[in-house]
Structures are given as C-alpha cells and as structure tokens.
Image: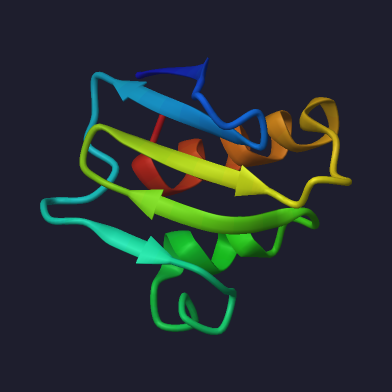
Length: 89
C-alpha cells in the first residue's frame, strides 16, 4: 500500500491517495466537523489530529481540509499514520 498526497485547487486541502488498498468499501462520507464523524472510526481518528477541519472519504482517497492557521508539515505525517492504521499497511 502506498499513500501519496496531492494538492487540490484549495491550498488548505490535500488529497491523500491510497494505492493498493481501499479506504472504505464503497460510497462517500463527507464530514464537516468532528461531531459528524463520531460514529465513523477513520473520520473520528483523523479529526483527532489538531488542525483538521473537514474530510471527504471515498474508496480511493481522502481529502483533508485543514484550518487556515494549521501547517501541512505538521499534519501530513499524522494523517498518513492514521490512514495506514485503518487501511492496514
């Protein structure tokens, strides 16, 4: 399994592509707050990372939008770690 981060048109969002595994079995989850993700293990763990503001989760990738004051250099490692834990790799 390989995780690659890709920029999006929004500088506060990064797309984390997962190759070799599925993030979720199917469908789409969009969470605009940690409260919305309370019942979703991956969403809850990603929101536990300080600075994560919204999530879009589909089978092939997760798009994370951070708070404007947060720094990607401090977020990426934690996001990738959580993805590896949940996807298994």
